[in-house]
Image (tube, rainbow, N blue to C red; front, side, top):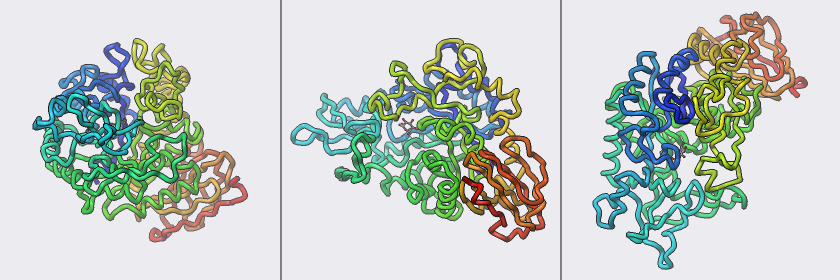
Length: 547
Ligand code: GLC
């Protein structure tokens, strides 16, 4: 198995992890300082959101120099030190690659903008105005408004999927492709272990610039970009060859990984593995970020995903990231424990977002504290991403151990009761549950490598088995708050509780049925006398008890 299959990825949003130079913004030295914490937690790889030179219009996702570090985060030497330090602790380091767009301050764009005849003009997407002077077509920006901005100097519009300060590169131009490949080689040679590729399903746009059709399902008051169906601006077939090109670059180096950020329905998502598995190693599976949190929905979703995967395509699961509301606020603190168990027992690589291991909540951000440009452009409908980007809560000191000064975003209100220092002393905490789960996943190959078989989902209980012929593990998750009795088949007994989410049943022997308490999760090793070939495990859930 490859490290990116067996391991657990931990996403760090560097602005908010650890500040060491007292400017209220996290930095690379801060990540180095906290490596022992990640080792203790037990994760295997860090994905670091962008640390490159940037005017920070979109907090680093607007890059002005792909091959240097922004002074706000440190220096190239700091990054080299991080690569070394991480590797010394057996941690892999994945960087963010943002190929769809640059900053408008990038020298490439400045040159491109300087005149219609500049050799780099065609590195970006320039079009003439309509006869009435308006934008060339109806394409919308993800962050609100038209996707086109007029450059009055050269009297043409350029296209931007996101902010107007993030002009899109023209991926139909081979020079752009090879420039980006060189960027990749620059970092791969420095020893990083791979890339998470940003917004990769947007990489190519229709070469005839046709209008996107209206979205019949759109309701006023929704996200402005949802007014149109992005058939000509996203998920174009040509994207696949661009990704295959990046994959070839990654494959020039041993043991590196290419992961894709792709928000698409499952049937389209899986296309990004590539026709011959020559696409990304895996496209992030964001299905759990928006799924209604009940056993039937989740069981269905897991089965659909498992069934849609191409042969040899490796699965993965994500519960949170820097763009979506915090898990513990979405499903509540009790279910956050169940979710931890789900994430660490499903088949495929788990990605953990910093702070979710202590149940950090979506922070309420006062209007005057809003920093996210998305929220500023499209205010008031809840798109703001600041609430999931607040500083890591390390301890109960004035700035939560994140910084000695006022941080760039407010610290969440609950930091004095909810922080790493307190949770480390409390074996019943969510943090300890994560540690135990990660350890268990490491020690039980059935969890990291075994097959997935769905057993049943009824009422609020989700049951599935992860199995290898010699090791079968049943996962029973109560996604409701009422107790539910679960009866095991005789041939699977006796079973042993490997881990219980409440921490009070570990090592218990199961000989008949078990009363699953509300919000409880159990991981049970089934008796080896059960028939390993059997797809189904004999479990009965008493529906009357399932609320
Ligand atoms: C991705 C990033 C998001 C960013 C956008 C534009 O979706 O995750 O944070 O704003 O791309 O780069």
